[in-house]
Every structure is written in C-alpha cells, then in structure tokens.
Length: 400
Image (cartoon, rainbow, N blue to C red):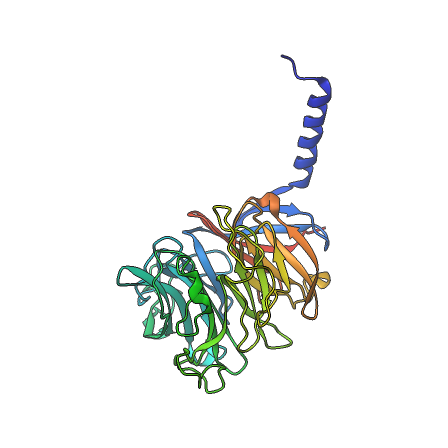
C-alpha cells in the first residue's frame, strides 16, 4: 500500500525541523550540539569520554575535576578532558545493583588541608549499606612534572578513614541515596536511601534507613542535632521519612540543605530540609508501587512535611545545582537537576524563595541520562552522563 502524500510531506517537514534544531560542529574536544532554551540557544560540548557510569563530580582549585566511576574508580580529569589513571587508596566498594563508588565532595578548606569525602556502598554480611570515608589527596606521591597523565605515578589517597556507616536493614543493591553536602559550619549532610525493601524503616528513628544525617568531618554527631538526646534515636539524624535522595546541596543564600528524591511510580520530590522534620515516606506521597499497588495512606498527614515540588509521572532526578553565575543571567537563582528515566536531559526549576514557580526541560534531544549536574568555576553547567560509555558535558550559551 502506498504512503499518502500528506504523510510523506509531514514526515519530511518533521525531519527538516529536527535537522535544523541540531547543529553539529566538530572540534578537537568532541562534538558540540546546539539546543534551544528560554535563555537562548545552548551549546553542549563533550569534554571527556571513556568513563564507566560516572556518578559524582567535584571541581579542584587548580581547574581539574575529580570524577567517580561506579565500579570503584576515582580519577582526575583536566579541563581539556584528559583522564588520569585511577586513584590508589580508594576504599573497597560493593559495586552491585545501584551501588558502588558514588559521590565525591571536597572539604571547604581543601586548598589548605587537601581533604575530601567519598560516599559509597560497602558490603556488610549478606547485603550492602552506605558508608562515608574521609581522605587526603597525597600530593607527595605525584611525579611533579607528570601531572599523573603522561606516565608519572598514579594519584593516591592517604589517611583514608571510614567516618560513617549506615545502620539498619541491609540493601540487596538498591536505594543508597549517597550524596554529600557540607554546611558553612563544616558539618556534613549525607543523604541515605531506604534500601527499597525495608521502606517502613524510614519512619524509625532507631536506624539510618531513609534519613538525612548530619555529622562532623570526624563522623561524630554534632551536639545541636535534633535527636541527640532522645533515647533510642540515632544521634546523627537530621531529618527522616525519605525514599532515595540522590540529590543534595546547600542553598547559597539560606544555608539550608535542599534534597531531591526518587519516588516510586510518580512522586519524585523537591524538599527544603528542616531540622528534625519528617518528610513522610512511605506514609504519605504522590506515587504508587511499581506493581500499581497503593503505598501511601494519602498525600497529607499532620506532622509530615509537604514537598515544594513533585512530579507525576516521575523524572528520576539525580544531582542538584543552584545557579549563581553570570554566564546565564536569566538563569540566576534557578535550581537544576538531571533525569535518568525516559524524560532524560536536564530540568530547570524557577524559584521564588522556597517556592517553585516554573519548570523548563532542557537537552531532551540529547537522549542521555544525566546523573550529576554542577555549576563550574567558569559559570558553565557541567553534566555527567550515566552509561557504560559515560561523558562529561559542558553547557554554555551557543556562539552567535
């Protein structure tokens, strides 16, 4: 049967439109593709390739990046996209299911103390749990002229110490959370997942399942934590009732931690994390189980917090960045998160204080799962793509 001329014309028009929206330019640093946005055309540049499921990104004072790979590797990446050999001294991880080497964060005083933090899953008994280690970048182990990229000694961590281990029912490989954010006082917030199976434990203050904890750089519970004096409660807990928070950052003006967590089928949430508050999982929420079964009592309950934004259907949010730079003036004070489900790409939320008043979905025709998003020291947005051939991408205004 012949295709009607109208259908052929429509198909051709669609192809022309798609082609016009994708302007490919090849440079020595990878392919650049232009995309549309409310701030004007965007350029997405591939800075580095060859990373295996990269998960966390941190910028060093000298312009290099630290990048984690979920199988258990930590690498330097130069601004030109060169990868170092894997660091020696990284703690052993349990790279099973959603677990492995996940987040990396630099101490606020890294330029002086060379201290960093790693969040990862470790094996314990017949399952896994989230752990946090503190370490130092051992500059003394480097060949001074090699920068570790042309045959010198591989980079190394020293003084590695596990400062926190999640307590509670173990995971079979899912829902570790595992983001780190450091407050102005130096204390660390760490997001911890519910391990999927034992989700009701997110309401139990006697363990760390489905919690955001606050610890000192040595792993102790600060004396002003909300449950430090409550019998039977874990003193590290800052908030509870969370599902799988894979996004955590400190608001640049208020100093409060903000968190974005995965819901089940629907119900991904953006939460402003307040001291001692209960965020409801699994008692309240806006999603259903993967089977279609009901999970929640309802969407609201006294004593439980409401998200400032939720998504139905889910976008599977990962990574978080508040935009404060000048490269994109129209995006100042926006909140960005990546997406790793069928939506993919980047999501920008327009904020008015602690209210979300707008949403823009970006880079969807990139067709990449975005695992982490960071504002770089250059004012660009830097992204990690979540796949076995992972990339580091740099998003800037397109050249006119």
